[in-house]
Length: 252
Image (tube, rainbow, N blue to C red; front, side, top):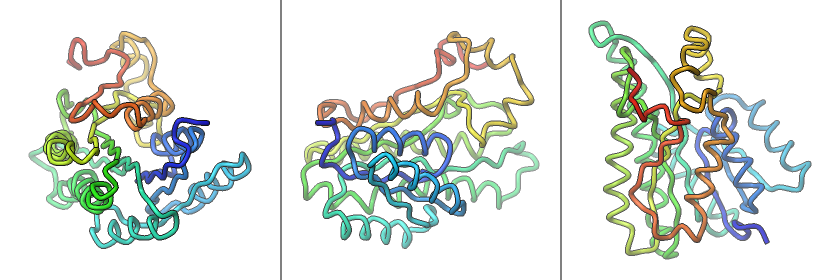
């Protein structure tokens, strides 16, 4: 029996990149996995079909994670379909880099809404069902940029630091009900969202990483799988950096 057999998981931002890797890993571990996508229906449908061909059950739901009504609807729909919701992974997020002196208020708010408010929306939506079940695993995706941001990342760094503080608070509130809340903070991972940075910096980034390689979505998915395992019940309120050692000496 796989370690997540009988469990139901929900992943936001699940159609591509890190989110896609997490969906695949959780499904391979035996969970039924619903995932939220915002606009790329082709990628979402492709992932569902790919996993269905392997006998794995997933379900794609279109929603705007920054909107509370959408989060409430998704959670209610998943529970109606599968009767429970045991695991939540908040992965939805965007980047709108720019120097503080010239950053538009729209780009500031968009990043806060999509990266941080979305976490609140889905965490609040699952909190009561998980507390009632006296079991839950929540993993919120942050970034090493929360501690070591580069110039031009004020909105992004603020959103990710906010996720970490929020998660610690939620962990203290839900621990006695058997619900854990943890954070995974990736370093440089090969995804579409980070491709522009990788192209500009090239081998300089790899040289700054003790592991001398960029991370893969599977590296993050493996860390998430560890934290959502039923046996990880005594780990809560923690931030797990998965960065190949990048932050051991800071990011310069």
